[in-house]
Image 1 (cartoon, one colour):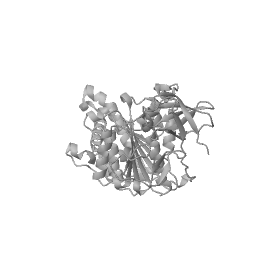
Image 2 (cartoon, one colour; image 1 turned 120 degrees about the vertical axis):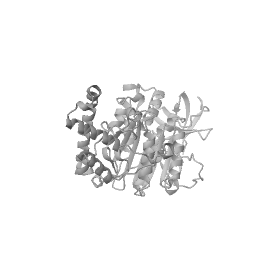
Image 3 (cartoon, helix red, strand yellow; image 1 turned 60 degrees about the vertical axis):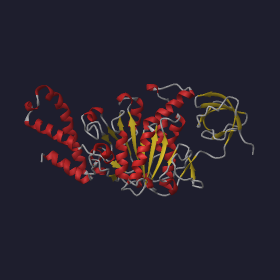
Image 4 (tube, one colour; image 1 turned 135 degrees about the vertical axis):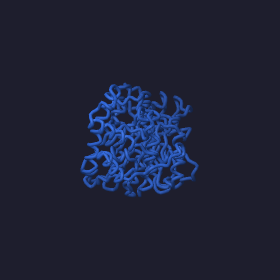
Length: 437
């Protein structure tokens, strides 16, 4: 069979335009440089019957107009199975740690992964305890659902994700994935050492597309990890915990590629395909009758603007959103969670129980009242409030103090021992404060 071969006729950043005399390769097909075999391309779009646009995965300056490429028989693939646990991969499924060779390991294609037909009514609404009081109360983790941790730069998103991995993974019988997209390589190295120290790497696989890498690698890292996670869900029937830091950077990488493709920007300067880009990623993290994929995604807020179009789009596709506040962090309250802005669609009696549901309603009322009283107290003082208002104000201050908690992953920095609080103890503590005990 004749190999499909084409010639590069234009280059713009990572986007190359390739002309074929024969039938065009399919979308998502993999092409290889005819002379430099380490350079590969993914077909992004057909521009006419003879030309296509492809993504240069190597970010190599050796690519030039006039050079030839040919269609590869295999797709991009990632390693799976027990040997992949404890390892660190890039978006192409290549190891980036110092571990042994994975020659002969089973691999699966990252594109066109076939999902099984399932009965979604079989899914269970199991609450996963995190040991972090403010999260278990305001945004409880539910198996198979999606939770976001949203905040600006330097408010503790990565620290909170690391703490969640520390608390949840050691009690979980499934497997865990950590996907670093567009973040500092130092943070990934620190996380790797933390997981290794806590003996959590044996059930964890890491995929990295860090900020020093090309937009191509950053945009593919999450999709590659998601394909591997689905394999564990369907083939091994293992529940998966899927941590992403940072999902905003995934959209940002797509926006860079969109600019190279010459697409007209939409609202806020983002790519016109922002919704479908995000939906493709989120739908790849679904649960079925085989097992569940529970995702935790940190979300960067550019310029602390929570109304940013990309942030709003991500927000709408999550079940729970934990909002971190710079103002609260500067007051020394950690985790710096905004108790009134944090929300969850999973806070229903059917999922968390009647007791938890009613307590959340009471606490939210108290915190709303606290926020309205702060301005009054700043002018006339707390002593001028009615007895009831004063009592509610004091309850709110006690609740804020109660939800402050020392974390295990910051012990070396703060010198304070980390705390793990069970969900039942947390609910009892909130009940005591509301009762005025």
